[in-house]
Image 1 (tube, rainbow, N blue to C red):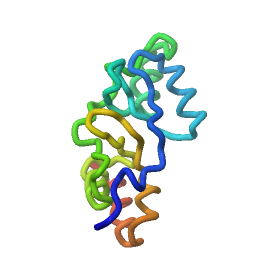
Image 2: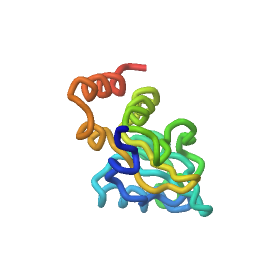
Image 3: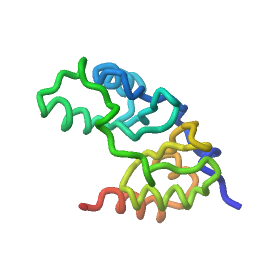
Length: 141
């Protein structure tokens, strides 16, 4: 039996609050040196993912004030873009390729417990599969 998402994830359960400002969210992304973070609701449930691209396209380019905008209604919903804590590495690979994402929130029940990244998976699989994953994620829609 292979490793599970819980065993290979590197990210902690840090997330952006749905009612935090985009300015605060941007600071978190910068401090953690990541391009995406899960958005958590006040109920501790995952609401979606916020990416640096979302901030540029949906806030800055639209002329919105990052101090007065929250990620709550902005991000794509997480359906399918998550992985269960006990899912296999292969399942995580498949989900990343299908949804064309480099980072997957890891869920235990409804609670966010971490994030598994493309780099985390690359350490667990052979280089051929890594190449396939990168190709699938990078392929034009």
